[in-house]
Amino acid sequence: MGLWFLVAEHLRLGSWDLIKGYTGCGDADIEPRIAMQVVSEAAICKNRVRRNNYISHQGFELLNGLGFLATDEQVHELLNKHTIQQAQSLQQTIALIRSNNGHYIGQKIAIDPHRIVSASKRVMPKKKKQPTEPSRKMLQTFFALNTQTGQPIGCGIGSPGANTTQATLELLNMVKTVNRNALILADKEHFTGNLFRSIDQDTDFEFLVPAISSEKIRNIERSLTYQRQWAGYSTAETNFNFAGNKEKYRLICQREGETERDYFYKSFLTLSNKPATVLLSEKYMERWSIEDFFNFDGAMGFYRASTFNLNIRYGKMSLALLAQAATYELRKKLPQPYNRWNSTHLADALLTKIDGDIRVRDDTIIVTCYNAPEELNLQNNYQGLTEKLMAEGVNPKVPWLYDFKLDFRFK
Figure 1 (cartoon, one colour):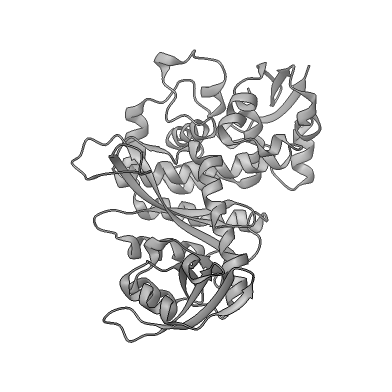
Figure 2: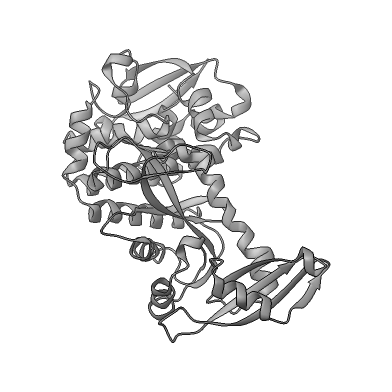
């Protein structure tokens, strides 16, 4: 029953128009409703909701404007006929709406490769997510995220036809739609000459990436004269060029330790003019917010891939970003500490564990929630929903529910 709260957030985000644009269908068509089921499945951290493990007519299918549960084959056919470009366009539009809604704050954006376990039957190399884990088939994805709010901007997929540089540049083209001159905080996998040259020549981004500890880098680190910043920490700078390239970039080396036998070096290459201590001790530390996102919201469709079909993967991940945006709006209405529940906890405790009933009165669907915890403050935010939406300038009619309005009762 708690999933019905997300209907209000989808109305505020304009999710239905986004889904119609992605599917190329209208209000009366079934395809956008199947896509809405995919969004709802992502919100409750399920890869799929099947009839053989689900009691029908409990509100889930009705929530999506359907009288049945869409099958795996129907979802497969829907996503497979829509292209990567259409999914990327959906992501860009979601990002623009989220930017206008204040979901992105500040000038720092983290990008990071993220491997997703895949159940694909195709022949492909196996990799490890962690050194202690067994090798498994992996789907290589790339995410961009606003570090201050922890909210994703978009994602892409690496493939044999799109290496790290190409996938990252596609992702940064998406980032441009919301911020054209941010400081991009990257990972070691982005330490490539082609990527630096492309970002330097074709964008206004600042860029900061850890240098791979090659023999060339190690020799540079030990040859520099360091300036002490505070106890046990010193920095030095020089110019650096990749092998075969004449372009020179700013290399910042940091040295930790007070005595020579304790020295530990780490270097970063950057396109930023900011002071070294600001970049390394303040800015770069925020890159770890993207790991928090994977831990916090990864279960919403970003931790397992059943297929390597790129049309399907891009479509599913893009629709999952729409689900994540709606749950973020819901979380903002919850008091502490409930607004810090991760996606799995939120789905288990709120979206799927509230009892209630659904009935129609005149032109309004009435969702009655029984024993909803008062401390969640749901009644103040969702009872009298029609009036609240109209006061915000949002049309209270739910187009995928045939223009019925929605309201809540709490008992």
